[in-house]
Length: 144
Image (cartoon, rainbow, N blue to C red; front, side, top):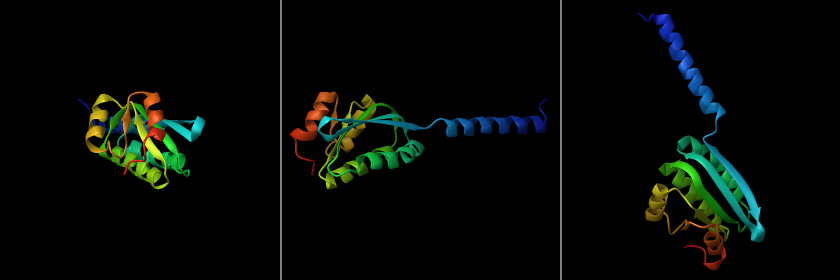
């Protein structure tokens, strides 16, 4: 039979381990590469749920804040995307558009690609190849 003290200790240890995992492991990681022609390739890795989106939003804004930035956002390693994550991407795309820049999405997971195509394709064009994404930054006028 389990006594109260043992049960309490087990519950506390469970939440301590969970808290350590949540704090120690970021929900989203980001790497930035500056390419020729003023293009920034930003790779996102992780989950764009509420915690991941909050974690990455300021970093994305900082990287995309330059005047007339052209950004290829690689979503191939994003394994979950909630509506708040889509909102973050739309916000970044709108900011860039206001500065005569552009954001394109590269190679999202199929289920996210379908959602993005049906909801924000006119704001954030989606491409499967890096070369097509790169060409799209300069070969088409900014989306209206």
